[in-house]
Image (tube, rainbow, N blue to C red; front, side):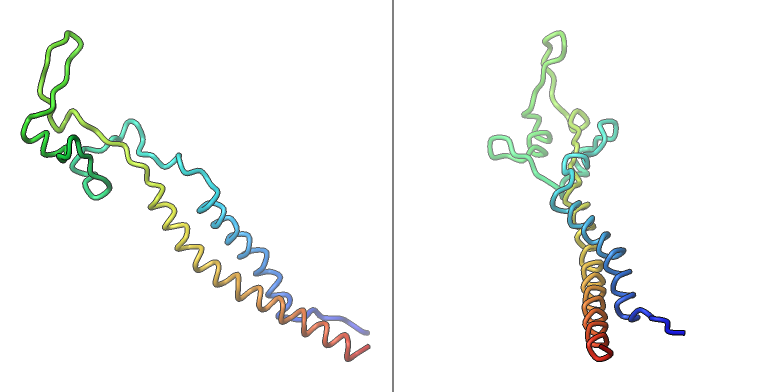
Length: 138
């Protein structure tokens, strides 16, 4: 009985190529071609100004917004037209967290890319060994 077995390196390479490779392609797509505008802080969960100091700074007339608020140089009008001082509680911030999501996706892509490269190498090595074996056996 003549049974043909598949080269183990070729088999491992094929499995890794399709499983790890698909994950790698999805990571790259998410990082460079995916939605970037869906990672905003939810409308109901706006952040206080103090919690966003590490993400951005807003200047009005060359002065930091927090300085304007502490010096009480910002005013607003209510519905009746009455002027009042703006305080920090009047200001809320929504932040786009895309940069954090992208860095997490690309960090994962480093590892899946390495594993994909190893799988691809095994695939090619197994394919070459299979071709060489076929040549030898005729």
